[in-house]
Length: 359
Ligand SMILES: *Cc1c(COP(=O)(O)O)cnc(C)c1O
Image (cartoon, rainbow, N blue to C red):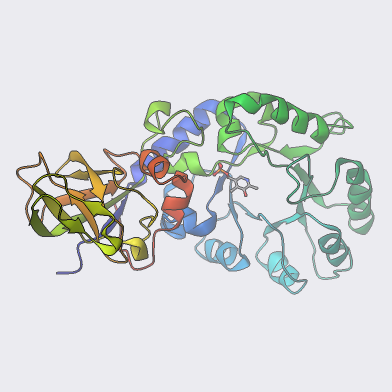
């Protein structure tokens, strides 16, 4: 029998979550963000489950080519554009779409002879100050592209820094203002702004394309709610089993660094999951975990291949009992909050040694 750790990916949950996005955005084109191996869920299988979307967004050229070779006909966008001019040939060959976010990419593009039918997403920095041209540089960049190839298909793009935070609406509207000056709509330009959080909070930002990532995986982008509370279904469930049980006396110590010391006699279970599987090492004692479907807590320090749980009150727990680290029955957002991170980090950190099954 293999080591009893497993990630289950629920493809019908992916489709359910996509339907929720569709309910919000109606006819707006949906670009499913499947970067980082579809947020740890597996690129191709996730894309298959989401095949009715209008486009996919990834980071690496290799991932884009993998999607194209698998037969996906939709728009496939490189979210950070190309990293060297050599990639332009493949972008043209595989009919990929590319972000252009800085002057170097722009000049590499417009000196490229090979591209025939470019599909460009021109990224505008409206205040996040990561990628993009400043709003006042937009017109010049647009006219350079038009001079080079008048038939270039161009979509303006920006990204919000704080759409997840209910208290930061002013900043979202400020970024919207910077994006729309002078008026993009009036100029008839295609546009894309919204990530998952903006889809939930700001219908004004829908424009031509929306770019949902995390909500497709059933995880809430909003600080104050879990995915379940938003009507989403968790897609990834990380499960394992108890592989040993220790009966401890008061003042016994557990694991590396004696981080947990018992104050009474208790049973603890050893679970075949550790930080090398993607479970966060900095999750403290008290982080929720399910054993036989009942909620209990992590105790002691997470080690590379194992962690320990409190079995007080779970009298039927034995070696071989099932454990849920996150997913169905235990939102990853709750685990993430306890570990002082976000669900995004936990699912994308799922390690390659964890076998994935699609259900
Ligand atoms: C990752 C990413 C998204 C998706 O963000 P979510 O919060 O997961 O919806 C959208 N747009 C860009 C540019 C991104 O990098």
